[in-house]
Image 1 (cartoon, helix red, strand yellow):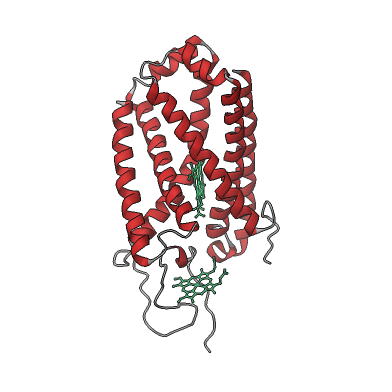
Image 2: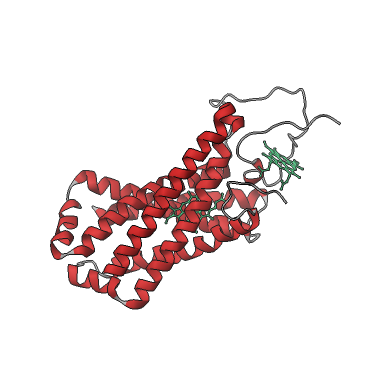
Length: 148
Length: 122
Ligand code: HEM
Ligand code: HEM
């Protein structure tokens, strides 16, 4: 038996429900680590976006708390926030946070459904990723409309 | 069972449960706030404030705040132990991760205290 090898950061089980090749065993076949030709399956993309949006939200919460505090503090604070929302940079920031939140929410629900055992087949994972992306795109456009 | 000195609960299973449980609460709260915003297109200060000074909402907000803290603690820990390790960064990996985790705890504590102040005070 060959030696077990140290693997990539992200456990591939999340992305490839039925991995056809087990990389735990050292083999001599060429390894493709070239990111420009490496194929990322759709579920891998939605998964990494979920992670990126989660980390971004961790910081975005600071902005949200600030706006919430200002808007609840006093009438003047509330006006200040509405005033702020008229300016493009603030709109953009809020829209980015909202988009991240909605994406994280939708992909998160998909994640929970898969934890529960739904859509774990290869086709199911692909379908889930497609639905996640389409719903998120719709939510992104909708939140754009809401803010502008 | 694998244990890790820097893990919050020292068990992957309870981390996992904390993250799922808090995710459900956060999802409910997010949808709730979006519904409030969607239901009142012409929001003014009085009605906005009235939403958050309602006691059940206040409770919901504070529970969600705690959920947020648990959720981000486990989440950021997971991310840190994936990328900021000795394997990725060499000998200083664990040290760098410790700094990163201290930063996360600090920010989470700020969010918690700040959030309680906001929700309690209004
Ligand atoms: C048929 C193929 C495979 C089998 C049977 C298999 C089996 C396993 C088993 C039994 C474990 C330990 C489970 C655990 O710790 O809970 C494991 C862990 C792991 N596997 Fe695989 N594996 C396969 C394919 C792959 C592939 C393709 C990759 C990456 C390219 C991968 C990456 C990993 C990693 C990184 C871990 C560590 C666990 C973690 O960090 O969560 N595996 N695998
Ligand atoms: C509102 C603020 C939120 C923040 C700041 C946040 C942040 C994070 C972070 C940093 C992670 C770690 C990412 C990773 O391990 O890949 C994470 C994971 C996760 N989040 Fe959130 N999240 C939030 C809301 C939600 C909501 C509303 C859901 C709804 C379903 C959710 C579901 C999940 C799930 C299921 C995971 C686990 C992912 C995994 O194990 O790979 N989160 N979150």
